[in-house]
Amino acid sequence: MNAVDLIVEDEAWDRLEGKATLAETSVAAAQCEIDDILPGVVAILFTSDEAVAQLNKGFRSKDGPTNVLSFPAGEHADNHLGDIALAWGVVEREAADKQISVEDHVRHLIVHGFLHLQGYDHQNDDEAEQMEDLERRALARLGVSDPYAE
Image (cartoon, rainbow, N blue to C red; front, top):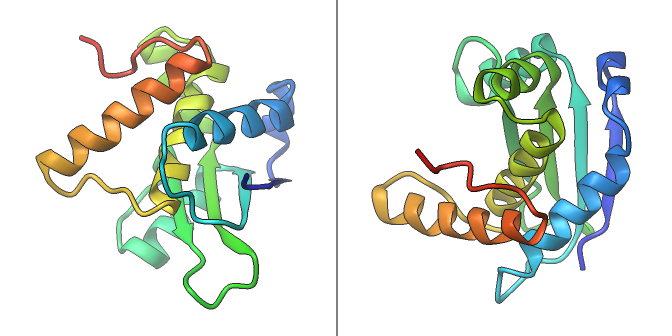
């Protein structure tokens, strides 16, 4: 079981009640869908669009914020699996656009980010299909509707 550490860097996230439980249950649901879980602590950073934009530029050479970023710690990290960063403004806007709760959108993004830390990706159609299937199943455990349904 991966432990979860929360870091709340932007006070806008204070609007989201129960972040710790939400994060822990989201990671646990994703773990249930994976056969070989990579061990280690997962740090989840609840931050601003500006901070995520800086990370996105620095690590991915992409301008602007995105909803979630994942940073695997690598082989030599002592009991640290990696980091997930969430941008409040992007997350809130996307939830409103999709007409879903911020809580459910955050659950999806944490599951998505955690799967990246476990080595899953979506660089091609087969990878995307596999990852999306894992996300759907994990989210169903949490009572969250399929985020990819049309």
